[in-house]
Image 1 (cartoon, helix red, strand yellow):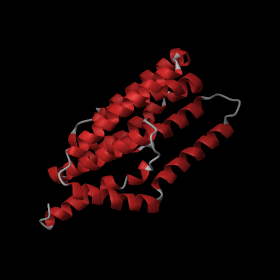
Image 2 (cartoon, helix red, strand yellow):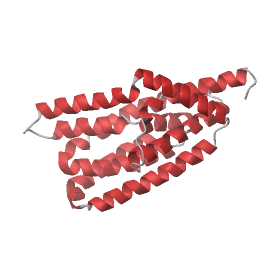
Image 3 (cartoon, one colour):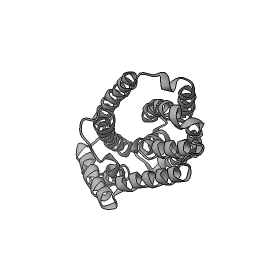
Image 4 (spheres, helix red, strand yellow):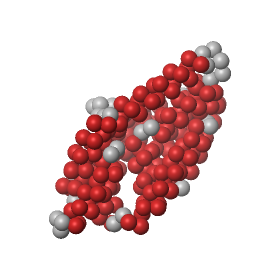
Length: 233
């Protein structure tokens, strides 16, 4: 459901952008993003407080962060977006902006940690708080992009639907072997990533390479299982 809402709000935002996007005051857009950032920060704190074991969350973040730095996850994501956008721009200079709008928005909407974290949360627990926040953000982003890049932005909703939908279905398949303890600690890590996103991207307080912590989402449940096995939980 979270992914469906996400895709629908991209469609609505794109449609609004085609008609009224250029008329919106920049201060209004900034205020809306700031409000979303504050809410994301508060939700992140709430999710962290639901963690079962703070030590597991800390270890998951450190180990996952080190793996992310070694793999250069954030750089890979950014470079992929830059390369695709550069190719699209060079091939479509002076031509229709449909492909440019489609590719730029697709990469933007699926490349962040919220897409992965939200889809996993939706598949494992059936709740979609994270994807709902992402949906609102994507809706306003689609509004801004479509006002300059056109209807191609609207069709990026298909990519979001497929990408996040597949992640949600995969998470659903492993939900049977995920214990409540694993879910709680995963929620704690996810909460910290949301705090990082709010501070770095939305409120622009301090730059944090949040993308490099994505492996923490997969490492933390394994650490929880190890702690339980060793009777340390």
